[in-house]
Image (cartoon, rainbow, N blue to C red; front, side, top):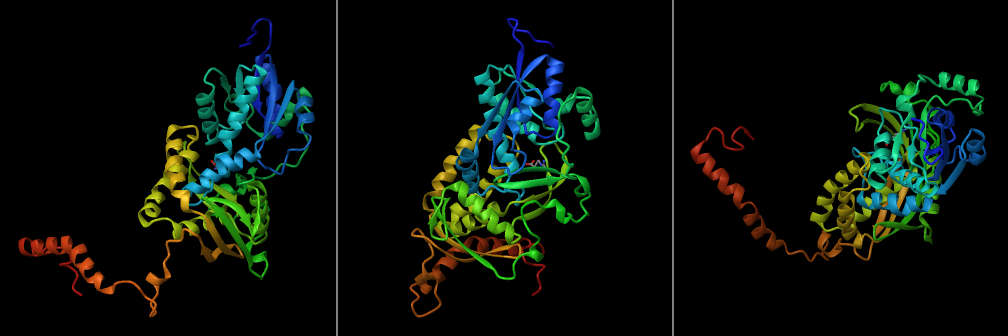
Length: 418
Ligand code: ARG
């Protein structure tokens, strides 16, 4: 396997987080493949483990380190499209982790090509969704590059064995206390699993939560927020225009302080396993809720109802690693067309873990008070309803008439003796 090309060492680009796995991985890959390692870290707005990464990577044996700030691209090209789509996996999960993977994979490919690497490596396990998201993206963007997933093939069975290997090889791994959970975090949310959470009947301990207070501990006073949207994209908070990153960070703080965005989900992984994951997604929860409220006001009925199916398809596609697919691009075209009128304001209330709507308005509002009112201002033509109902119900009426004659015992409604 020791690939020497023109006397030059093989170069492997590794998706690097600075944690134990990828630190040990640098050494393991170097030794096993006699390769040079380019460590690549993408910034998706995670708050942990991004200090001194370059120093850490080089000390652990990498020959080069790339730190790529992906935050703006993540917000503009991944998060906003998913918000416009209303994409919530299995009706709940806003997919912070799932959305980040294709972008990280793309950044890894870009760095690999710039550095002349022949191989890509990542630290995902062999039973999760993330390996699929990474490798499907690699194959779509750079099929010429080889892929290694050390965790699927290396000899270590536990964290202790990895630490023993690090000690033996003199790999400096920071002696940070291991969290009892596996946590993945970015600006759109935190995903928490493993440890005691593996028993689906166990209540998640408070220490599992990273960015929200318990609803019971949240202030007794409700907080109001007004969110402004333009064509489905949030552009301002409480009357102030804001870039996407700042807006999401602000809502994460306000939402987290009110205990908003906690969820506990048994979900269906792509690889056929049901897993239990706890999520914290304050900003995503508030924005999906507010965006939906604005759509209720501004989307024509059939578009609103049809789009629910598209939301599910779009969510499945993201979750299942198919971001770089023609289907996603085609669905974006549909979704963007629906968002032409999703412009306006939504005022929401955050209170002890809940988000509720206080009001909404839009220049494209399809709500017509003169039609809806039950007061004297009413302009709806009540007489027209009679003819409408007659024709609307004609098919049912005819069918039941015939059935009553031909098969009196089985006609629809025959067993309802009211
Ligand atoms: N279940 C989520 C997904 O597939 C998150 C996976 C990573 N979770 C974690 N706690 N490390 O998108």
